[in-house]
Length: 178
Image (tube, rainbow, N blue to C red):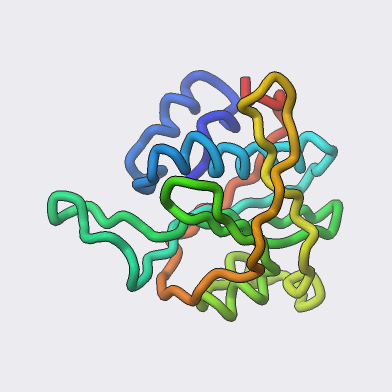
């Protein structure tokens, strides 16, 4: 799931709406929390990260709602894994796919222990074990951006799933993706 706002040109932005780049998301989550997570990730690139990598995908679990129309599976949790090679920063945002502002930020090792997936399997153990270094999501719905308050709770509940991970190399762009 590569955000439309990170695309370098009009053709790429249009192509970002391909079904292969989408996961069903709650509208409130997509417009608020997930948009704020994407802004925090984008800011890592704008802060001078020449080598920032992302893996974004869903986690399907036992508490997922039934498939829409019996065909489209809606995941319980989307995640965005981040590795900033320049800053030596790595971690994973996991968001509740529903209304509200519930998310977790964790190390790659903690994410693997909870979900059985390692988004960046070739990173060293020291980088994968880094904790608490991801910036909180950036709230942008007022006149001035503000940092979000991190909710209590450090880890997500275990869920099973296999990522169809897409790794993109972000390019520095304007803060608002334009």
